[in-house]
Amino acid sequence: MSPVLSRTGRARRAVAASAVLNTLRVSPLALLLPAPAHAGAQVEEPLANAVRTALSAAVSDSAPPRPSFDTIERRIAYLRWLGAMSERLRKREAEHLRRVEFLETAWYESTRAGLEPSLLLGLIQVESGFRKYAISPAGALGYTQVMPFWARLIGDGHVSRLFHMQTNLRFGCVILRHYLDLERGDLYMALGRYNGSRGRPEYPNAVLASQRLWGYKPT
Figure 1: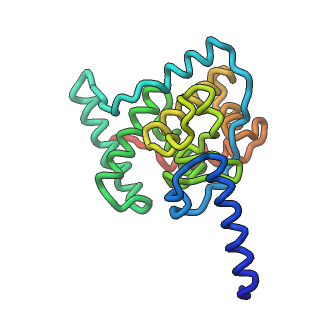
Figure 2: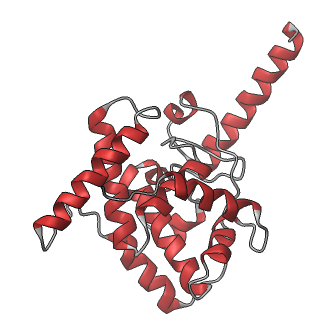
Figure 3: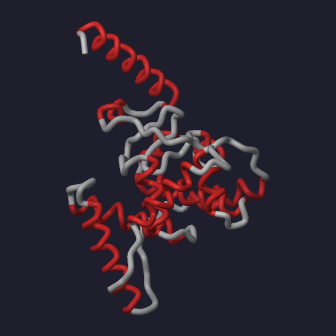
């Protein structure tokens, strides 16, 4: 690449970065982290008052993920899952404690929303590549690529909080659960709606393929 093209590229990146910061009011730290994600984004739709209230309640509890089990067998199965997923995630996150914290939260939030943990992990792989500070060209944020309008619709309006791990995972799970309910349990259509590409096969197929990579069968 010539020096002129290099300078032009840097200038364009600086303009784009400034636009993102002005729009989202996030810390410049986000722009020092890995490159933006390139997934699609949810489309803002009117919400009935009852739905808005239910979704707001679903994201408002900020309690840490502390799973409880009614039998020792269930707890052992969870710990085995945690160990297996930690090994698979090692290439993307080298620090053990951060891996475990992320997986504990992913399990807690997906289970809380009635979703398979493997589905959430597959969605994150497609949406952000497990990058906490990923920003898509459409402005979607974080692991699950949540569009900023959700912070206004059902959150506290602070968009930058979508970079908080548990907040982002909770929003992603609550939104996907909402779309599943809208689509009467049709995961294929719900995933398309999540991505803003309802009715097209590319995104649902990609997430479902990634979900298989994160599947777990106890030995």
